[in-house]
Amino acid sequence: MKKIMVVLVLLTSPDFLSRAEPFQRVQEEVRQRAGANVQWEKEMESRDETSAIVQRLLKKPLTISSAVQIALLNNRRLQATFEEVGIAQADVIEAVTVPNPSVDFEVQFPLVAGTLNRYAWLVAQEFVQILMIPLKKKISEDRLEAIELRVADETLELVAKVKAAYFMVQADQQLISRLKLIQETHAASLELAQNQYAAGNITDLALLQLQASYSQGRLDIARAETDLRTKREELTRLLGLWGPQTEWKIQGDIMPIPDSDFSVERLESLAVAQRLDLRAAHRDLMSIVTSLGLTRIYRWVPVLEFGFAGERDIEGALNMGPSFRLEIPIFNQGQARIAKATSQLRRAENRLAALAVEIRSETRELRDRLIGLRDMAKFYHDDLLPTRIRIVNRALLEYNAMQLSPYELFLAKSQEMEAERNYIDTVRDYWITRAKLERTVGGRLIARNSTSVADGKTTQKKP
View 1 (cartoon, helix red, strand yellow):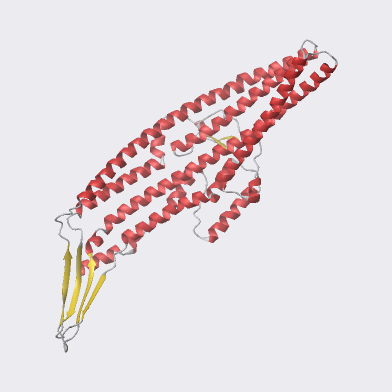
View 2 (tube, one colour):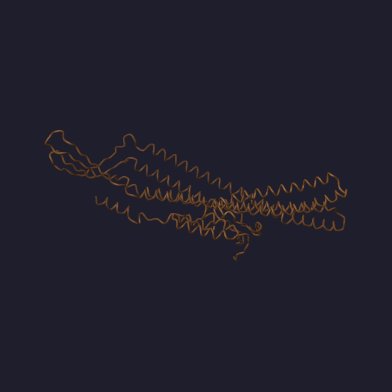
């Protein structure tokens, strides 16, 4: 009995029960990989604090970093995800809690007059569950760690979505400004055509063609403005904003692709080493292995109770002594539990392997797409756009020398704007793909020559 009491004291000691704050892992992983802070609002004071931070950030035009920070603090769906950590932490507490003893009490009333009532009682404790506490603690902590990693991974997923939505809005704003410049060219061309048509210098067909170009330009602007409103709402949802908070603004054009970009070598190995959901799947696997071992160890002793019983018989005699109850594993020897755990183990192994394959494939796909978009953007920036600008300048000289019609000049200017529009789309797709690649490799990409890009500005760090 003394040994049993020693075991109980050890199992309930602070050193055995203590564990670091579970959410710290999530905060550290997100801070390291996304460069932003995340907070779990478990009390009203925390909610007021984060609301004040969000309001302060919204007073200025949004940047990439401020948009990500607002989403991490204000997205209600993300806060709901954080509660998974609390649920898993409660499971750990349950696993290390010593089961309550049971008390049975029995009274029998005599049918013969003149005899005493019979009383019996039993105080018992199920000790197999106590002996299993260390292994149950390990299993529950493995599951808690897996959930922490998975929650951190979902947080990084939100970061990638916010970045993609931010670039979509910023690119659409820039696109609309370019479309309006193109429309000004169409308007000037149409006005000139109308004057010439009134003077009888152009045909009906020429005028109709210019009118159609002008109308198509108006339609393109209307469509772009509709797309912008839709994408603003998508970003607003990700940021968790409503009411007056939805009047946020983004200023400036989308940032150009930096000259010195990150290295695309060994990205697959980096992704396998860094992905948090892959680590979570591995922790799940380890938890199942431990659980299977626990099932095999205790399959022969499913129930073992020790206690102390007492009884007063009808003659008034009091009898007391120890008692125990042992379930005999004749029929149920844990076969079903072992078979189930074995299947769960194989399933976890296959899921882990499949996830690793998918991560590698996704990394290669995004890497190749990013390289292609970078080459296309470079071609637009270094070749096509300068050529279009030279064509416009040359057309303007010939127009001033009365060697070129105004319509040909307007066409050259329109083609220049169209090339710039395609360049904006390409740069936008590059940054969105880069955000997805960052999410796929499980962290921020390290730029070549220690170059970093932040908030639309490219800065060079000293080696």
